[in-house]
Length: 65
Image (tube, rainbow, N blue to C red; front, side, top):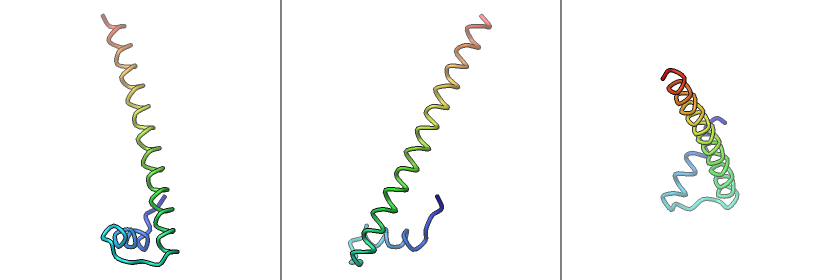
């Protein structure tokens, strides 16, 4: 997902407590939820990759003893 400059700016306005239209606020909520889901997916993939790498290192250590 690419970053949206307009929604990033609106997110900042909401974060700072500045008033925005209801439709813009709903867009910001949807945008932030999509960003969070994308971050969560990326973190999960990293954890899986790290776990597999750790397991592979353990197998190599065991095999070379």
